[in-house]
Image 1: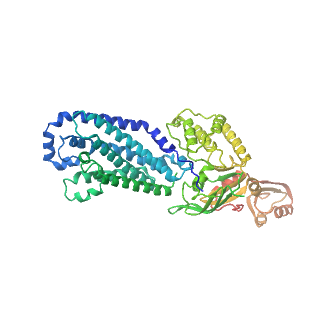
Image 2: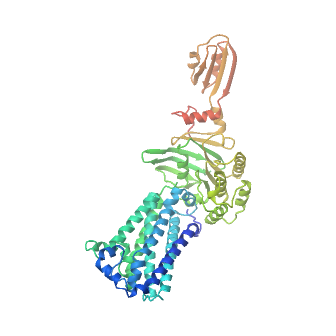
Length: 268
Length: 304
């Protein structure tokens, strides 16, 4: 008996339109930061003091996602962008939206008008997921383009590696956005959703960052999405098919969980 | 004929709280069906179950012959809905809401939306955050009506509207039902629906306490009898009659509330040398207030 209106991306488009100013701000801020980091590289390229500092307290450096030399191109990009700041900003964006798009809208009472559209609830979730992906893609593309442009500042990292690790951070953000959305669909509470997404992301970051320097944490690194995106030297060796597969599989599981949970959510 | 709405034993619990209990409801097509009850009676919960926004704990609900849970997409396609607490996107204008909603519902013809906006004198070019409650409500009404749905489910539709707009809304409801479409209208007060409603259902503490036509409700309201006599009478004589309660007595006059046949009362009054006699039905609003107030429903209730 289901006669869906052919799926048009109205729901995703509405959310992207309503969040365009915020997304522009995220992208501009990240663009300025990325440009500043790559532009500063020549000044630190020959400096050995930073490497000595890191070597003197590798555990503290690991807390910031830094391991190994920071004066190499990949070390510089990893230590200043890909291992910490970029994923952090990405997660702020996707966890924030993931919590707002279902649970937040239910709390604001705007979800009711969406939920009485003649589409299945799974379609609503799919469009919200598409909106997360679009926002994460915009941010990842901004960083990738700026880093590739910034290679003129004596960075030797290949464009392919930049694109692949940026894509991995995109998937990382998408995964945590979907996990947060699923938590929101399950509970209907924005705060619980943000808390769940943030707690999991923080644990994931710490596990991946400290695994190289803390032996008892090391076996747990496979449970960290950071490990599969930026925590296993992806900036220098590229992102493997296995890395992508894990990130994609987690995203699919989270999306499925969100759809199942949203089917049962009481909407106000 | 397929009912516009039919529920059977519909229940919804929130933990230990029974929000809706064993609700049996039939709304015939082409009717204005008023769904009345005080705050927290279960009206909005019922509406949300009809639209599959919330799941029932037990029981069954059908809208336009479709199972609400299984066929909710088709139910949504054929239904217009105005929520009780309408929330619009704060930065979007009414016009943007209408354009977006029409697109999302696959509606290409916006002529009715334009006509409704004109009819309600709706403010469409200011962001929703700047609109008054009444102007937001007008946008909500346009969204509900603009696709010409077979069934309109309206939760407190006149909330925030001024008397002129209420009158305009009443005219619109008449037109809609004149076309054979159905209006399910949730409200607090009988006053605003009694001129339009074909049938009225009263829900209290999650239970249906009455379903009747307005005319039958009027007919079944208690009669208030006042009689004055030439000599003192014993009020116990009247209290002994079935369906009669004495509400006032000053020796020479009695005031009675009669819910049964009036004949025995007339005979008892005639036997005691009456000098004056009046009988009239109680005010309908009083009946509703009684439903709301009293722990048990008045004895007139007619559950379906």
